[in-house]
Length: 492
View 1 (cartoon, helix red, strand yellow):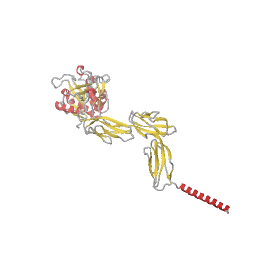
View 2: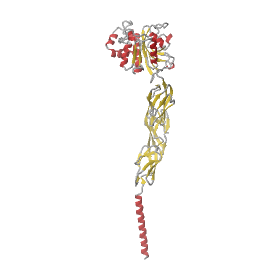
View 3: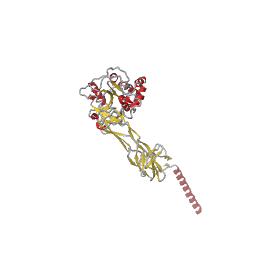
């Protein structure tokens, strides 16, 4: 009887144990849980998490979206070095997964040119560093990044555990920025090579305003600084807002000695300053083997034309090329007829210079806008030319040996007729004259390619046309070369 009782007890215990085991197994197989609760990831990689045996909707979230992010399907994205938790929330419970990201303290870096930033490795140790393009940015063995020039590159670090972590580096710059703007104009300034939005500002909102898109609006004359903050970079430039028709060049900014065969001179212009190439017509490198005497006597017209085209058409022709190639291309038979004359010291038998009228045809061919004023009164010419020069645009003109004004110095500018170019005005109200011939050093000193004179004086040596309908390509007297040519007039 006792044996049966012991056997019965043993069977009961076994049955209870088996029942509990079955219940535990069934309970374990049906439990809701995350596929992983601890993850080590490299920045820039991604991994799928699953909430197994979940019933109903699952809401995914990150405790730090700057380090890791997660989408609605549980895909985890490692962004930069650090530690965060991914949470999967159901109606009844929240489940967590710890994510350790091996990476930098910055996932992407926007850095100003010549500036530095130290990248730090988190959750590991660095073994090796290198830059994808050292011309854009370099990196030291301690992770110090230095921006070199505008562009994009990648800084790479190999950790002691063999992981490769990367940081995209951007070195931005401003495009279409101008240091000068005229009142009531706008300009769209763009930031290129940046990974971040730009926060724009103007140091003087009364002078110029700038919106969130980088559109600068000039409001009144004055100075301001336009600034863009993007990532770790600060880009800025000084802006001067000017009233229209009031552009002058500081005398101190012009060269003191211009007695050379060729010189480039920059004068104030809008929207950018203009640089002119000025030649000495009988300089050693500028004389013509084909027409040597012509260059000495008449090369001034070709020199004036090349000076204007250098700033307005982007071509740097020498006066000889203008005569022998450009003029020939434009005028054909007229050119052959003119230059078939014997090239001697006799001014009556040698070729004549291109006329002001002829110059307008070449200006048209190069797309340079102009206004040819053939007939004028001194008072109206002074008013028009000064207003034009103050817009930052030049004037081509011809002078005679004798001024029409009493007391003027005879032969000061020429012993016959001579073509020159007014480039602009100085802050001392003097006209900046580009002259291809040397004159008296007692009057002009070392300044020979560039000379200075009052506008009233120059107009006295100028003369109107005697025939306002002349279409002579080459000099035929005052009929085709009187008056003046306004380059890029602003009222047309």
